Length: 547
Image (cartoon, rainbow, N blue to C red; front, side, top):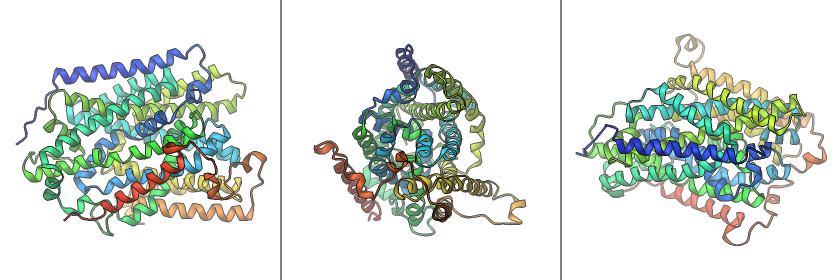
């Protein structure tokens, strides 16, 4: 039996404190360096000086949060590798971002994605997307991350959930408010390294104790080692739901969500804007092995009798492994990794909220506002957004699991946004009036579906309707409806293009490949093909049950 030491050792405490102090200090230092020349572009987009390694690492670390470490381990324990689809499918949408969306974003020189929609469609589309983006950042990126971090810290150290939420929120908000995007991407680059190292530690140690890959295969059901499942599988995630539903949520998340795409908007040039997401795509291969696999390893160790069968709640799978497998010192490193994941996602979302509100709402109200005033407004909005997220976070316990909860909300928000962006850059006739109607009507339908899902277990609702549509299929159905609305209305009232909007539609998809890019292995075409082939091979390998 593996020994467990559930007490917090002084060494672990020291590592955690040093990490927190160091990250906050670096973030604040970045802000103070540019304080004298606090221009809007410097604060919100890092002066458009970001290079591909920083963009790639920042994309990855903003995406990865404690939601992944906690919930993917939980899903790994319950369902094996099935939920790894949400990591590996991301690589395909990052290719789409690099090839088709990033060039237009750089070409239009926008500070926000709502700004892009105004240039392509009209002002009402910009206003609606700005509002939706702020709401999604508060309730998805920040709220779920704070709650997931609090759950795992409670499981590891017994810290009260609300205490964890407030403390981490204050620390993260501090350096984000002071430093802006430069502080965010600098700390994210560091935090990505810490996060990956901490996650790798628990995977490697767990594999060692379970007897390597062969030992794991022998101790769990073979189906749990596959990513694509048949209809009726216990995971509730059949293969067709992945291939129909993920493109809808993936294109929104990776190609049309301000929190994520803001790193690309700050790119030095088009090549960096394209290669950065592809670099992130290669990194996205790792989470299946370092976030999902540990949960399956935990199940294998329990089945082998090497871990006690005392895991009462699957949501504590990750903290259970940390407490039982890791020695003193490494516990502190992994705890720092958890904080890294939480803080990087929260800080990135806060900065995006500040950018959206400052550029898309406040500056429209007061067009003559100076850059310095915009920065001040952005800092105030960052503070308000953090308070709102703190209030929302405890309600996330409503969902069966944190990861399934966040996926459900994304599924109801994303369809109209994905449809408007995809048709916007690929179909010249997509009109502004049709796009705006699709946005508000699609959002209304999404809200209705969200409420049906939230209250589906209530008797008063069951008297009228039995709602049992899986969220991944619901998002596909919503996307089909939104597409029909946009196509019909665009045909009835075609778009009147401006000289600017004409440049924001591909004449045909192959036009996206006309730019030569860098020579050699750094060429975006070569990297896109390599990433695509790599992911196809991985899907083939992990769709076959091991014998």
